Amino acid sequence: MANASDTIPNLTPSMIPVTPSGAAVATSASSGSATGLNAAKLPPEGYTELARRMTKPAKVGPEGIETLDGSVLPVTYTWDYASKRVDLRALYEKSKDLMWNARVDIDWSVDVDPERENSPDQANPIYGTDIWNKLDPKTEIPRLRHHMGSYILSNFLHGEQGALLATAQIVNSAPTPDAKFYAAAQVFDEARHVEVYDRYLREKFELVYPISPYLKQLLDTILTDSRWDFKYLGMQIMVEGVALGAFGFVHQTSTEPLIRQITEFIMKDEARHVAFGVLSLKDMYKDMPEKELRDREDFILESSQLLRDRFLGQEVWERVGLPKKECEELSEKSEMMSLFRKLLFSKIVPNVKKLGLLTPYVRKGFERLDVIEYENWEASA
Image (cartoon, rainbow, N blue to C red):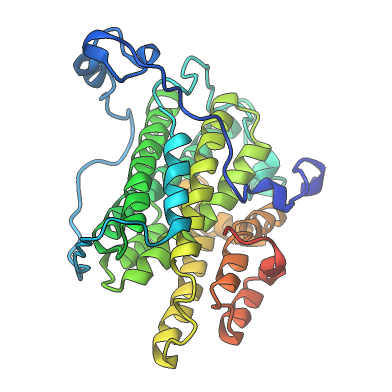
């Protein structure tokens, strides 16, 4: 089996953006009925026909809705609209200038073949094994690439919907206008992320996987917990932190130009989202009673395990006709998957430390996951 380091770039802090960058959205206005809009972005057929054209369902994918019953956060009015948190207001102002339009700023004309080696085959957890070597290189390996790519990107898509729902809850409960404004801006970011991954999977892959049960369990916990800080800790620090690591890996290793462009745009947004969590939870845990603090410590470790397990490809093996149990065992032992799973925590560990939550109890958990090496990497805010 080839050494992962022969095909995958060295993992460094520069793979994950600490602060967002990028050009501001154009501000030129058009005349007439389009006053205040960028004329270059107006769809020639009109918005109604555009919406009708873009609602084609996935060729293969999950359907339906699901309702969660759980504790509801209190709704918080704030009657003084003057800024209370300059750092959050600055983040909000930055987010407005860096907003992008998934319909016109992404080059959707790029042709994508989901069966090509768009990411190194070495990144597949069964690469180089007896199972892999028995696969037909002209039919079975391309099909596996298609399914594994869809599985990974589909869970990005579902995770973005979870972020959309959780951040909407934060708008309701945030105690300052600055936090409400930024959370509202993030809600728009998350809607755009759902839009772009959904379109990519529907139009280019024509295959969407259901959500991983590990990710679903974590999202359900975040969305139904009534403690406001769990929303930030679960979504902004844990889920968004892992997303930054995963997106950085995809951006560095993929040779497919469209997903690289999409990932680059999304990473800039995600860097701000994680910073929002770090800034909002600053000093939150300094004097917290021991019993309440243990709840947060347990949550960090439990969610870390769920986030780690969501990338093992459990749902893929059976669908493509491979022995599920054996492939899962190979995934656990894979050198490449081990490297990938560690990278996922490159933002979580330093951010948890900055919040004062890298307690001896949490440290032992991170040591068991073999990710404590990231504790001295740069935090997000």
